[in-house]
Length: 197
Image 1: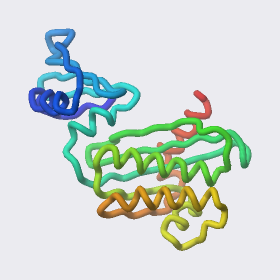
Image 2 (image 1 turned 90 degrees about the horizontal axis):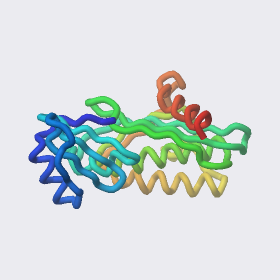
Image 3 (image 1 turned 60 degrees about the horizontal axis):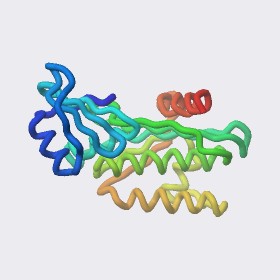
């Protein structure tokens, strides 16, 4: 449940201009409530709390566009191929901006890694970041995206093309192979998706 420091009157104007439905607050402390897409917001004196299935629907309107974000991604399958899940986390200087984990059907471990990367990049674009530093524990995905290794499998090539298309929308980007312990939260989200799926 992201909490954004924001002037409530300015936030209300931005949300109304974006087409949000705004209503009165439910308590003396709430200035107003808003709904936009699959997200809801509650405004207090100098903070807007965002919740719902897709907080980015409101956060992308309220946060200043631009800036750098760190994207951590992980994917896994139980069996290869087998039931698969992904996890991704976006972290800025203010902390975790967004994260997600979900089951994605049956696929290979490597394809799941790519799907996690793609979903993380899509989220970074939705939030309006213009620089992304990507971190993942899949050496194969990192080296293929960098162009150091070929992607011989047609499904992997498609996913690499999609990842590179998304990356072309950022002013700057980098992708780094990191140890699993550095990628811990994304890994946890994969496991949670398996447990809850």
